[in-house]
Structure formats: structure tokens, C-alpha cells
Length: 186
Image (tube, rainbow, N blue to C red):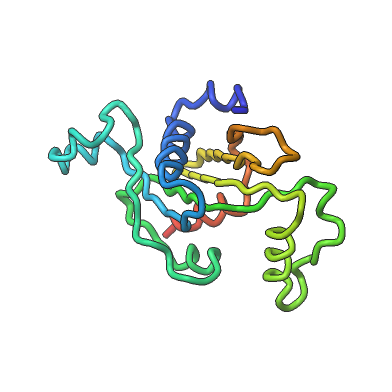
């Protein structure tokens, strides 16, 4: 379910491009690697590369440009090494995550002790109440944020869910948004 207030007030087009990125990544199915995108001003892009006119929605304020795969390792460390040029107005990242209901967090490792982060990820990935999801977070240099999360439909016999659920809210992933914002600072 989209947050109606955030969707209706998308004056800068960021929520729309975030949904577009999620739909693009979804065409590859599940079990996709992390994908990073630079967001560029569509008008400026077409002014410098008019040969892209047939491939780009000229009415969209932002065009996502897929980047090379991120290096293996921790996502926060990889993002900390990225600095976008001034021509990039924003950044977006798509990643698959595991979501647990609040009551499932009891008994999980805290992640604070050495090796705890890996144990926490393993415990969440194997938890019976887990839901797999794809999260797309996007930010612009001038502050707007957007997030879209697609919850993967369950396929076991105990759950009658048949379609993926979409959730939108600009603060679904505050830590990831903060890390993306840092890539846009000099």
C-alpha cells in the first residue's frame, strides 16, 4: 500500500523514479544483487546526449542510470567509498532484504558483539516469520527522499497471499538513506 500523502505530494518526481527503479529490478525476478543508480536531470541528459531520446522518458524529471556492481563486502563500506560528480542529482539503491515482524526480534542476536552482524543476518534469514523484500531507497542532493519496498508473496501452503505487496514511505530505511546522502557530499 502506498502512503497516499507521500505519493500525491511527489512534486519532485523522486517517488515516481523510485517506483520505476523497483519495477525495472523486478523484471529480473528475485535473488538479484544490489543495484546502484545515479539519478540525473533528464533535460540535461538529453541536451548532452540527444541520441538517448528514444530510450528516455523526456517527461520525467530524473533518469536513473545503472552503475557497475558494487564490490563484494559490507554495503556501508562500499557506499562510503562513493562520491558522485556534481552532474549526478541523486542516488538510488535496490537491495533484497529480510523483514521480520516486531515480535520476532526477541531472541535474535543483537549484532553488537564481534561477528554479531553476521549471526543476526543468518538468524533473520532463517526465521520462520521472515518475509523477503526488495527495498529501493533514493535521495536527491537537495534533500528529498523516497523508498519503495516490495514484500515477496509467500508461497507456502499456510499463507494464502498470492501477490507481492508494495509499501511506500520516504523513511522506510533511514540508515540507508543517510548513507546514500553521504555519497552526494563532497
